[in-house]
Length: 70
Ligand code: SF4
Ligand code: SF4
Image (cartoon, rainbow, N blue to C red; front, side, top):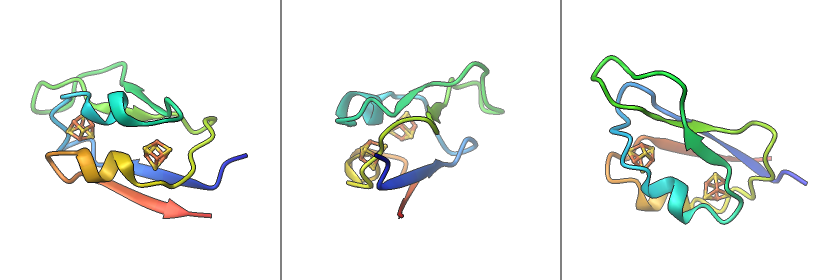
């Protein structure tokens, strides 16, 4: 069951995929389209079982992930 969710700033994301490697629930994957800066940004899967653990936000070098707890 979902315990939290995140929002990823699509403009600031550089598509490094570090958040994807660290998320224990595989809640994040590459988006389908490039952002304005030409990067393939991270996309949050709304159907996933995010725990709100905030690991993704902690490892993101661009500090572009906000975490919310349900
Ligand atoms: S808060 Fe935790 S479970 Fe949710 S997307 Fe980030 S790393 Fe994954
Ligand atoms: S770690 Fe941050 S900059 Fe890298 S893909 Fe994830 S959200 Fe984007």
